[in-house]
Amino acid sequence: MVGNIRQWKGQHVVVEAFGLLPADVQRRLKVHFVVATAEDHHQYEVALRARIVEAGAVHSVQLLGPRNDVPAVYAAADFAVHASVLPEPFGLVVPEAMVQGIPVIASKFGGPGEVLSAATGCLFDPANPQELATHLEEMVRGDSLRQALGRAAATAAQAYSVEAMVRGVTEVYERVMG
Image (cartoon, rainbow, N blue to C red; front, side, top):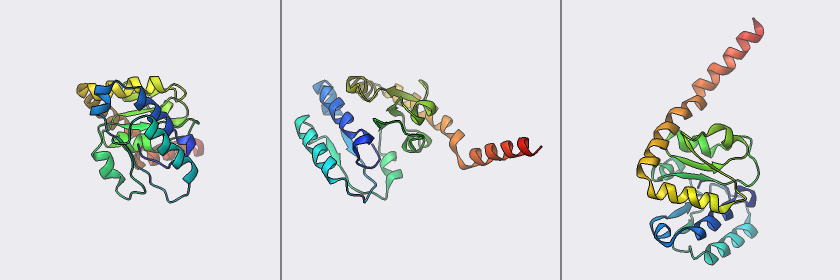
């Protein structure tokens, strides 16, 4: 999970879902939160760390702090999670992971719900941590699922490349200007 530690980003939803997983899945799953921010959200981080302890996840869930090597973190990931509890207009972390062939589990609200399909990732309601736990378990247990979703995600992410965006905007201008 890459992103700023903020309550609306839903890190607490991931921690709650982790606590709902069967013990064998918890042992196989190491959750790493990658935080690329210098902003101070100390109060939420303190509460999040307490939730990690309550979920019995102190050896599996780590808050890594600010990073400048996010592509390397994605490259080491089996899948990525986007858990915003408020709809994001786009959710840049979703296509960032997709372009690297990383399957994504994301909030179904806002942009991620429009970017992902059943062929490229998994969507869930962030108000339902059990739904996320189910997807986490599927990803942990399903090597072929992760591989298929990752391949499809990488292909679909090409629609969000700089070249594709420039081409799309140029086509709109050409149509409008006749």
